[in-house]
Length: 251
Image (cartoon, rainbow, N blue to C red; front, side, top):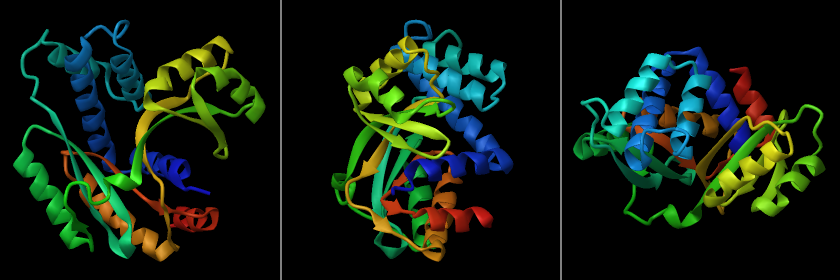
């Protein structure tokens, strides 16, 4: 059982409960600005922007901040930064492979922040391509279970490009190619099934199972990386069993 989505849920709970909330806001706002710059500032004609705005609203980002980010990105307002995505690769403690995705307007600062966090927390950066081959970019859509069965969801999304439906406790996760996320969401809407969340991430083909103490070391490293304003996402190939997740959630 991959700990991916359950860990993501744990992480979101954590973000809502501590000082990370401000950082989470900043990341969401940055995504809105980039989406508006890439494909225009009209959410009705830009599904990615529409998604990013919905995510920000769900996380309680103030509407004023959302609107200003949209305008900066689309050029309606001055002050937008020249964001670029940079991917760093390396290993954390216990040989856990890590992809660190940065969205930055200062390449040197991002590199310094990532290198410092890695070296202080038992990790080390690798060359480009050193771990990326283990990961595949994957699309996913989450729906609340409610009264739904796995078959209900599968029937709704099968022809929209869905690869599999996973039971993630309170939610079903539909896995698909990143390019099929919108089609899967449209199929769910047609079947009157409400989408809870959707996104792309990176998933590892080979996973490293960890005990709670080793997982804590990775989380400390992830926290240190995410303290940098430039770090948007951290992906790993750690695999956490239900027992380990339960132990971590007790802390």
